[in-house]
Structure formats: C-alpha cells, structure tokens
Image (cartoon, rainbow, N blue to C red; front, side):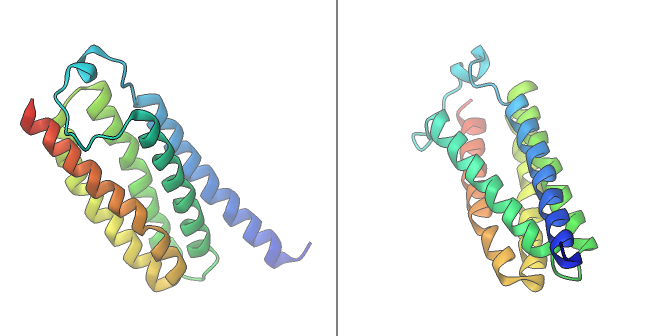
Length: 156
C-alpha cells in the first residue's frame, strides 16, 4: 500500500470518527418524547422527527466528505479547528434545547454555530471547492433550524 493511500485512509478515518462522535452525541441528547417537547407550540414548517433525523444523517455524511476533501490538502490545521468547533457545538445545541429545555439559550447558540459553519465552509472552499460546497446543505439546514428554534421561542 502506498504512503499516499495510507495517508488518505488515515484522513478518511479521522473525518469519520469526528463526525460519528458528534452525531452520536446529537442522538443521545435529542429527546422528542418528553412532555416539554410534546407540549411546545411549533411552527407549521416543523418536519416530522423521522425527516429531521434523515436530513441530519445526510448532513453528517456530507460533513465527513467535506472534511476528508479538506484534510487531503496541505493546509489543514486551521480547518480542523473550524470543523472541530462546529462538530462540538452541534450536540451542545441539542443538549441545551432538548435536555435543558431552554429554547432561548439554544437560539443564542445557533447564532454562534451558523457563522462558525459559514466560516468553516469558506475556509474549506479555499482549500477545496468541493469541500466547501458540500457544507452548503448543512448551512441551509442550520438556517432552517434557527427559524424553527426562533418560532418555538416566540410561540412559547
């Protein structure tokens, strides 16, 4: 096996581990069966939980691919920090929203996560256009979650 192939496998595994850990934490903190969540007044745009789950998993796969395409390039330390920050903050939002049942704090956190995700996409795009473009669905999803979170906060 060539050194280049070993390097690419190592980067793919690293990207996968980071995203799987974040996704697992997201899943652990998300609880839509609580009385609090069930009792919330929600936006008419709120998708069924299964749709949200599927879209979330697709976005994590895109993040893995984006991180991989970024890692195989030479400039990577700054990008790893950007991805790490976003992947750490995403489960924190789930924890604050679902476990702490605090829509306002979760909304404020989204106002930090969204620009961090945009910055990550820009930094990734400069390294690999494909990597940056793969993050566009995540940014759109975060914008939609921001809208839903805001609506929940305002209605309740």
